[in-house]
Length: 81
Image (cartoon, rainbow, N blue to C red; front, top):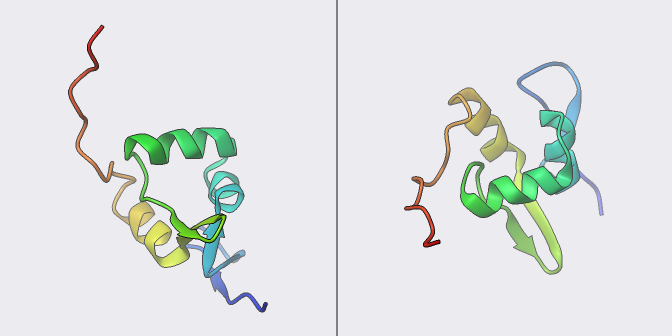
């Protein structure tokens, strides 16, 4: 399968048109586990499931960065303790 490459907003490196959890983690400088946690609570755009794979369109990621990395869901009420 060929991968289409696009340039990132932060430089002249290229990223695939559909970014994996590892790709997003590499771009943000954190661990894939942290990215999954952020997606679970709505702090980053959701990943699209392609079979068993989770991918994020690079355009969605780039737009989220341009908009200042705003949470995509409002914070929910705190859980009962």
